[in-house]
Image 1 (cartoon, rainbow, N blue to C red):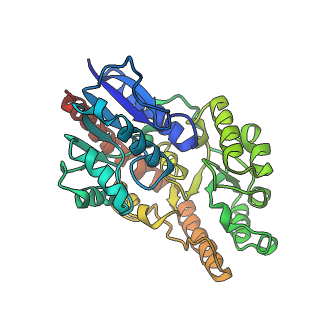
Image 2: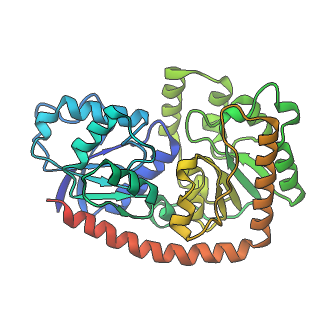
Amino acid sequence: MKKALWITCGVRGNAGDALLHQVTERLFDGRIDLDFRHVSAPAYLSSSDAAPENVVIGPGGLFVQTNSSRHLHAKLAKQWDRFEESKYYLWSTGILQEPTPDELAAVRRVTSRAPRIVVRATREADFVRAAGPVTSPEWAPCTSLFTDRLLPADRTTRDVVVVNFDSFLFTAENIADHPLRRFRDFAASHGLEVRSMVNASGDANRLMLDLFPLIDLDEPLFGDLLRAELDGRDFHEAFNAALLRHPSFAQRYADSRFAFGKRLHGWLPFLAYDKPSAFIGMGARRGMPRDYFGDDEFLCAVPRTTTMTRAQLDQMADRMIATLTRFIAREDELASGIAARREELWDQLQSQADAFTAALR
């Protein structure tokens, strides 16, 4: 079996990345002898480690313009002489925004020695090519789309709409008559309860949680912590400790009827259970629903700025209500279509995982 030193986000910092780590480990179990190193570790090689032939980086947002990417490139640079003979392989990661000049140099140092680059969005592939000259990147579906096949979870359906929001949407000035109350009330008129999913810092504040309580599975772990609104290191240490106690990252996605998420893992893994789910996040990711399903059925393009006006919040509520209306009316049809498309993509992912393994030295 081929061996690889695999640099990953792991189970810390972000519940979505924790899920992503687990499904990726399961996907490659039996394919590659994996030696995982956490991206924020002080060093990737100890003095007794042999220089690795194969270095895998990914999955997730750890290559450009994230805190993880800053760790990655700084740690590689510090031990670059130890990696002199290594080849790099990128799995389900890439570039979603144009790199800074400093980042570009670090990115090119890796991609110029990468025989295989697998991305999870066509936009990522475009940015990788622009950084070139590089191995032509290939698109593969994110492994989290197949959480149902890779991790145990009880598949149920409760009358819940899960939302993953930005905390900056909710302020002391707007909370009393917040337009998203209309979305909550519309859902309630159809017998649906709206609950929050929090994956990382920036996903919640106490005002939001009063309006949209946490999903049941997360409340005992995250509830008091999030309402305390800790800052910086205090938050991350407490949140990481809670992540390590979490009983099942997969189960968080398995029992709602619908979802709206601003993070990739605030919407995509719900589709693993054939639940209609809409992406409401950053513009750079808004092509991903089309990448996966061929159209914008699962995109809800809403305004998104750190200083949302009343008009923008009203527009957000209107568009989410319109999308939920469509989801309710076509629920069975959409679920069937998701299942059929995932079957195709699962076969594709298996072939790509095999080819990725074969490319290792």
